[in-house]
Amino acid sequence: LAGKQKFYVTPVRLYLIIITINFLVYAVLEDYSLVNIEFLKNISQNVPWLHQAVEQGQLKSELSNYAFFHQVNTRVNDTLPILLYFLIFVQALVLKAQFGRYDRYYIEHLVFALHFMSFGFARDIALLPVHFFSKEVAFAVSIITTIWYLLQSLKHVYDLKGRQLILHSLLHYFIFFLLFTLTITTAVFIAMG
Image (tube, rainbow, N blue to C red; front, side):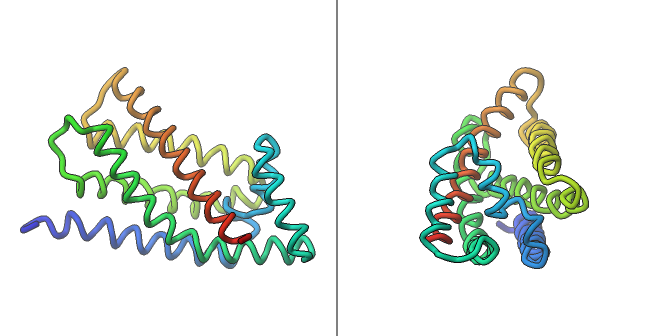
């Protein structure tokens, strides 16, 4: 740890600042958040169990549409930062398993995960003007930029090239997407609880 404090502390500080700004912005502009429950309900048409769970929660609450969505969004915004905090540690474990043959400590994978998540939150804030026009376009741009960033960062940090870079990127994105989706779904279910 001697001499590497800045290497470890800076990504933590960056993440905390960006996630705080992100949640403050989306607390004010709730309708434009990608974690907006009404938006998730609309895009989950192809995920019947999630769509049905939100509809049942809405009926059970006996609130108006606006009141229900506002209440759940507020609760999700209260719960999600804690769950995302744990997701970072899980993502670092996945990286450690995925790149186990590399001579790296868990903390180095954790730093990578912090940078990756910080990029995602900073990107979401930067895409806010796009959200005003089309949430679907903002969602698509989020996915594309996440994949691009992951390719670039894996290439730089783990010195991957060619087919190995593409395979590791796709594998990690797939695992991260599943974990992120599980995290958001968990936050939604806790919020509707």
